Length: 452
Ligand SMILES: Nc1ncnc2c1ncn2[C@@H]1O[C@H](COP(=O)(O)OP(=O)(O)O)[C@@H](O)[C@H]1O
Ligand SMILES: [Mg+2]
Image (cartoon, rainbow, N blue to C red; front, top):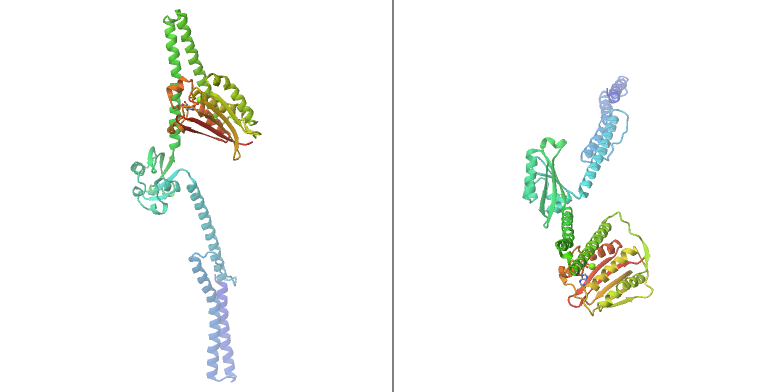
């Protein structure tokens, strides 16, 4: 019940009657003439009418103006409240509604931003399409895979946006059957990459419209590692098989009667011992590699004096080198600062490098081991004057089982794992290793370790 506004109108009405009565009284008493009384009355009633209308209309006008501004989105605007009547309450209600609306919009925006941030930072690609096959959304991962943009693709038919026949077909299939689809696809990005595609019908508010969402996970690296592992197992089997076949051959010959001839038997047994040694070395190296690859293995960290270590390793090879007519030279900087690392592992690095240099350098050659500080690192190099390594093999010698000359390396008793182990150990110590070589002139293997 609009009491207060009614009050104002009734008051105005009452005052108007009072004025009319007053003017009538003045006229009766002869204070004013008839014409004057009519004029005065009209003036007073006009004034009262104006006052009453103003009291009601001007707050309404103000409310209308602010409400229109709010409708344009200026929700922070507020209607001033002058009175506690119906108009004041209306203004209060509109203010309250605007606040609620602005809070709801803020909540929705926050929610949307959060969802957007998740989609943006996902490594997997996401494509959502509606029931008509039109793109609802693509995330940055998909933008990158297909070289498209969300802005350009939204609302367009998915067929024109992603140019991959197989994926299109899967999306169509999911749209038609409303069932999950899972498949592995090769997509050119432009280099070929393997994706596991998972398409699910969209659930929730949009269900009626029957859209689907596709998730693309890049499993190229995964596949590559699987491939590496398979190749490694095949390589290991082959490497184990070669000495075993040889041992079995000699064993069978011995059993077939060769054992009766002592000199033949001895020769065969010596070969078998050699092959057994090779097998043992191979298995040792394999175990060592697998321990290095096991993330749970923690490096022992000690202060290692490289000058002392070089001396010890040279002692191991000195006799063998002299017998082969090789000169072993050591050039170690004085007061070499220590490095922090596992002494056994670092010794293994040096042993492998010097062993290779001795093995692959023909008689009369020279091997130089140098240790110096270069740019905050300890640099150790093993240089030989051997056969050298062709350019195309230089980067591959650190791969497992890679040998430049298979027959020759095997004849030298190598496992093909030495340099792979070297690389592993050096990198586990935060260093790097590389090889330089000139065919016919020699090779230099160098590694660097951070100083302790
Ligand atoms: N100092 C070197 N001079 C020439 N070739 C080398 C030298 N060191 C390594 N290589 C080549 O790199 C290959 C891999 O070395 P490595 O992993 O130590 O295996 P292995 O010594 O058991 O053959 C060797 O088979 C050889 O062909
Ligand atoms: Mg070796």
